[in-house]
Image 1 (cartoon, rainbow, N blue to C red):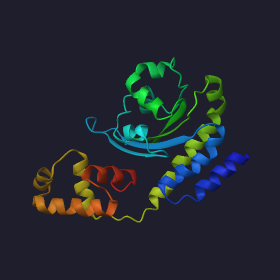
Image 2 (cartoon, helix red, strand yellow):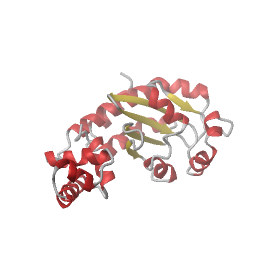
Image 3 (cartoon, rainbow, N blue to C red):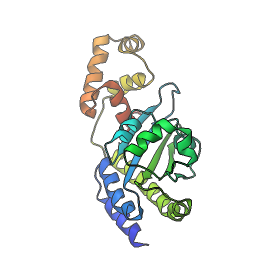
Length: 234
């Protein structure tokens, strides 16, 4: 086993939270030119409102865009939605990826990002995650090809540790809270859920508030995405 692999597994083993996993990962990939990395979990159903949960190592415009789901129609996202083969971009103004989405790439550039690498990791039916890393420098295709093997190792290790961290969560939702969040994830309102479950809207809102408190979520949408990300609903 190479030194970087030992460093990676040691760092991940000591990571107790999801953000800790990324913080440990960046220490291993920074020496090969990647200053930022992120992890996105996405359930693409229902198609109208896919559920997204994103973690990132830098809070800038790119992170805000990512968290809001603005990057779901980029070439990288489309590739990762249908394939587990790695996807990379050089990050130059002549890059075909950048030419396709000039507005988003302008913000990407202004936040100090250039070349990058990503890979989709299927967790189970209708749910997949994407690990991605980017650099403040443009990267040549030859360079990206050279680091591809290492990055695939990193991506797999990150997903494995993320799954372990999520399975170790001490958050406990009641059966009713889970039920209400599942219906909420399908786009149902409190009134509609109340009718389905034959309960009052105030009771539904009570369970929503309790779930939001447990998940430290500012709203019901965030509660749903966090519960899904922690594998508490499915």
